[in-house]
Amino acid sequence: MYCERCMRLYEGGGCPECGRPGRPVREEDYCLAAELGSVLSDMYADILRQEHIPVLTRLDLGAGISAIVGPQADVTRFYVPLPRLEEAQALARELFGNDRTDPEGEQEP
Ligand SMILES: [Zn+2]
Image (cartoon, rainbow, N blue to C red; front, side, top):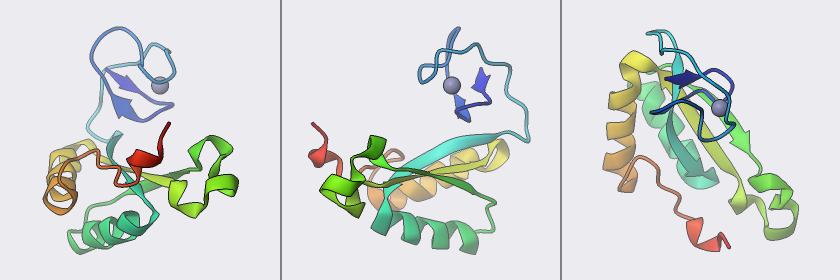
């Protein structure tokens, strides 16, 4: 299933992020490919451009704590069309080790 609000694919009856019921995914849907910190997100955006993969980005400001702990807490989420999703995730894995890399994740509580 696909959640339009969170733009993510998931298994089961409700979106794990917002809990709303989704719908079957369509080919033109954008899906979450990677979540990256500010430095890596610039690199990844460049690579997607080189590969001509269309991308939407959404900046997650770390639930409002970025003013306290600094801009490195910002996470950029990358969404790509479903037909390019596997390709985009593979690029992220090649670059950063896995498709959900959060190199600054150790700062999480
Ligand atoms: Zn959702």
